[in-house]
Amino acid sequence: MRGLNSTIFAYGNTGAGKTHTMQGSRTDPGIIHRALEALIGRLEQSGNRWQIACSLIEIYNEKVYDLSTGTTDELPIREDANRNILIPNLVTHRVSCVRDFEAFYGNTMQQRRTAITKLNTKSSRSHCCLMVEVSEGNGDR
Image (cartoon, rainbow, N blue to C red):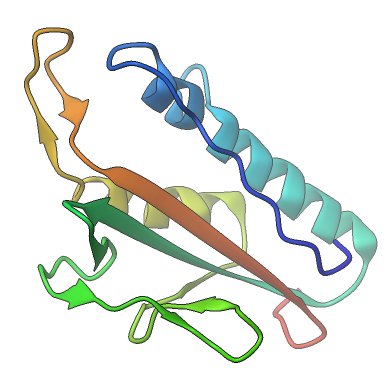
């Protein structure tokens, strides 16, 4: 809430439960849903105006894709003079409540590459990165 970046990273063997821990299910939400719900709740309690923008990328075979566009166009990764990572042409989606986030996240995650393995029937074949940017002052809230 004070301009800091944070990362939640799940690591482990195939079938260890990384996807379930991060995504959860409808009856048992994972870290992503719980974190966004807590963030939006805290922002609503602040009384300030705010805006949330989300992007979701997939890294597959060392190439970056925007999951929200439904295209197979590869995106470049760049670094600016201050060593900030940029992904030109990455689409961001405004989110104003938990329901908006759930719609965005659910639709984009359907684009993710999966395959059957010996350990489970729907194993992710890529890395996924959800980016959430909070801005104060110009939002709808």
